Length: 473
Image 1 (tube, rainbow, N blue to C red):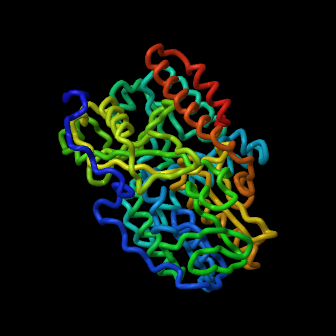
Image 2: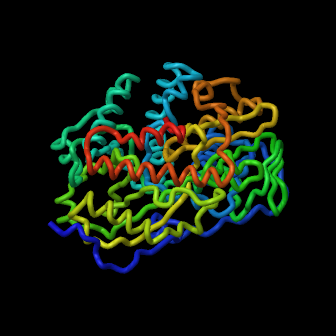
Image 3: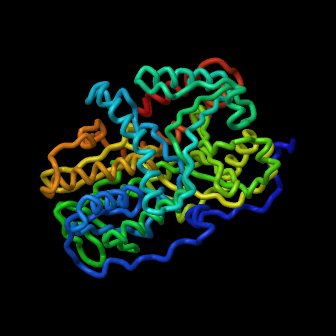
């Protein structure tokens, strides 16, 4: 078995948006907005949320005039940088959703998310979008007694809410799926698929354009207001204006404290080869995470690599975002170390690429979608890292809300009655409190992980306090 020492290799390619574009290169940009225009629906943001919304609107009514405005290119943000998990995990907490909509509302939301995984795969298949999709489920491993206890509690909670297909695995059952060094056990749910994120977003953009949407890239929106989106090239005037900007929302006037742009970073190895994969397993292409507080997430790619991510530098002062995915060398080393510890068979495989991106976090860590009937302004986001699937649910929900506002759909549907719709929470604290709070939060989680590794036992008190202070639970 190869050593777990880090290999003396050349630094991986850093930034360039993400590895997911490495094979094809960054896409050529569509033309910017040529001047002022009118539309029925204007969508600000060309990621998953904006594109899914445009897709479902035009499938419902091909005559609609739908305009999508994107500052960079479709898939420049989290949609082209994420870990490729199409997961049914809720982007929020059951207790908070239940506080407004009861148990039935939470169960309905969970069922909707489970159906969404299959909906993403259905559309990709029927529209000819090849995105390396495999529905292998989601495997979470525990590598300390405290993590194992949390995993057992999580499965028990899921069963109490009716999600009985989330099952516990012992160490041998876990290893039969993926051999993670030191794994004491795991859990598995079928409601997750692996995709190549950039292939999905690029294919979806092409489909949406083919359906008749006007997609304008290199078009920054400087202000969103009732009835219009303002750009340097002219305004798009529309009775419905939808904000689908996720981690870049803080750039818009008046929205700096609405959602916090949380940073996440990834690395990817060179292809491993058959012998190393024989030592690791992972034949089912499950998405893979762990039960640590400062958790990691990973997938086995279609071309035989390990792509693995974690928080790295969690937040940049004043809600700043990265420059094309550039990632600090310390973060790359941290992720390389995690990979080597989890997979000794891959410890001497060089990294080929490292990148970062931002995801949006509301103050109560619960996603939201909605449309104000007084103004026609709508929004969706705050996915807290579960956006690949949740954005699809958002697209269908915004479709229903927009059609109702335009008079072309019912006033309420099963989707618009889900507990995340219309949810509003207070903003994040002003700086420097916001920066200090996030840095302290993740320092606490990393400290808790170290304490649990050293002492075993139950969840660290440090992590319990951090959960309460942060508002995560």
